[in-house]
Amino acid sequence: MSNPLLRNVPAHVAIIMDGNGRWANSRGLPRTMGHRKGVEAVREAVRTAGEVGIRYLTLFAFSSENWSRPEAEVSDLMGLLKAFIRRDLADLHQQNVRIRVIGDKTNLRGDILPLLLEAEETTRGNTGITLVIAFNYGSRDEMTRAMRALAIDVAEGHLTADQITPERIASKLDTAGIPDPDLVLRTSGEERLSNFLLWQAAYSELLFIPELWPDFTREVFLAALKTYAGRERRFGGLSQPTMAVGS
Image (cartoon, rainbow, N blue to C red; front, side, top):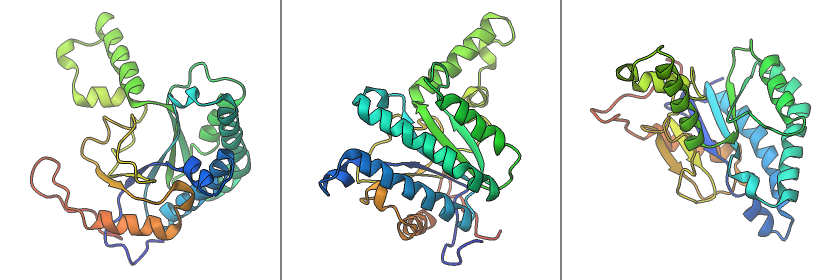
């Protein structure tokens, strides 16, 4: 059900979930506790997004650069992701949530890839909000893979160089078929995209908020959406009206 307090609702919100470690450190807790608290914020964000009418919610769960973190922390993050899928998949499926995973799926270790594929397959026919999980994702890597695929098409004679357009490039990205994000939001006060959706965010509204990800409550999310509703989007030209709730 749409929230009457929101004047306009973005169709697609992408979130860089930042600040788990700092949240834990500020409380004298291990970083792993911050990640565990962050999982609760994920659940709250998905619920809120569905309730207000957002159609796509993309969460930056694990970047291709995160493998360089200490092995114990990476292992804990993998465990949390697997636990989230195993514990929450049935509930998300019941809520008509469709899951889609973006990122490089090659050479993923252990049982993480089968779980991600199971989540996608189980929810493939759902028609509610699409939860996009960016896992082992890096935008430059994504674009490199897309350009490589187009180069192969040209080399094999399926395409000429003149036929490479922005639309063709977008069709080779992991996000093919997903609309570009209207709003890219980052928690923790950091103001950078960190190799996240660089192509797709060309005309996104950017919002950087001070709250650490574990403190990303429903109220914080709604406040961010109200800020977005007050933005005037121009896409390089004249202002464009945003979609009114219920329209």
